[in-house]
Amino acid sequence: MTVQPIRLFGDPVLRTAADPVVDFDKELRGLVRDLTETMRDEGGAGLAAPQLGVGLRVFAFDVDDVVGHIVNPVLAFPDDEEQDGPEGCLSIPGIYIDTKRRQNVVATGFNEHGDPVRLVGTGLMARCVQHETDHLDGVLFLDRLDSAGRKEAMKQIRAAEWYDAGKPPVVKDSPHGRGIFGRGL
Image 1: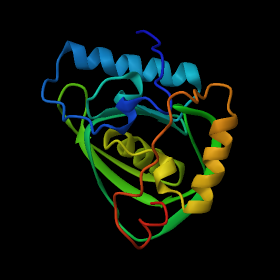
Image 2: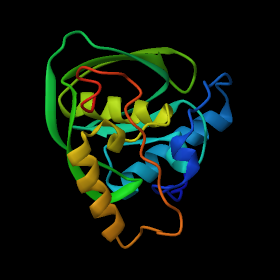
Image 3: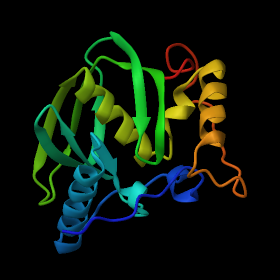
């Protein structure tokens, strides 16, 4: 297990959709260990492979003493209930902005050995699963904010010590159309 450097906002890998995992091999198991170790070292609730510069659909999570990972996740929402609260990202350190997400989620996918897994999450776990799955699609939580939230986030990012003004970041509009998705979910 090795703690890896986390890619920061502005790195193009964070804006690139990850490829599905097809080989459930030793390399994948090493990636899952690296994700878990790096996430824990940074004190995060989740970490997706693109944040380590790896374009594969896998993420690790550690929420409310539930630690795990999901490969090739597919999300379903059992209802329309929403939550709105502070959200941050290890790739955008120190920035926390209220972000709308679904309150409940069901994630299906696989473990590192290719066995099917199903995770039912609510609250913080649901937020984490949606956030990390977004990373796999090249979407950042900033993309889910309304224009006032994006403006505030960009102000904070530009003032952050880690921000490199020489690499202007790209903030995309939500890829999910209108309705609750257009406002940030």
